[in-house]
Image (tube, rainbow, N blue to C red; front, side):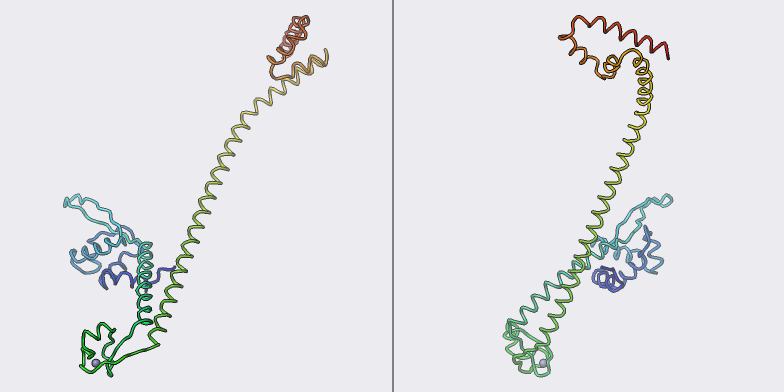
Length: 272
Ligand SMILES: [Zn+2]
């Protein structure tokens, strides 16, 4: 829903009158305007301006900050308009209006109304009894009055209001969806960047490992010359488990193997 000029006018005039509207125009698309600046711009007394500001503030249509004047020692208030709250109040007023119109329509459809020949005033049954079926304006007798145009007008107004509120609600949902999508996107990008940094860290850690592998391959080459069986044993990462497995089955060969491993290691170191 666009906050058009007419909508702003409707809301502000209902709260603070045309003077309030002038004040809102001074505040529009600005931030933190001093109350004294507003008073000089509007050519109004500071008390009148403050009174208007408080009216708007009571409906949460403006916000304020206060700063101490270093020279005079008192506080000066600086004001900012909250356009979203004008929108909110506009829609709230429309909802109230819709409820009232629906009640009025129901009354028109179910109750009887009375008026004089000059049609000065229109009274419902209770009011007609109170005035003893005489017009309170001209004193003429009043009679039953039924005007289908009134019902048609009310129905049209109700339809328009309902459409306006429906569209505003749809827009609200759309904005919420867009905001949700934005949040999800932001979270995803955060996760991605976090993953990338982790991968980068891993990559930097892996580099020295690769070097080790290269060294191992050098070792392997040394071993290759001796025997293929020994090479396989060296490849195993966990030496403890391999030793444990060897313990029960090959007790006699154990010391020999150890010697051979040591020899290989020494040779490898020498070649470095
Ligand atoms: Zn009359």
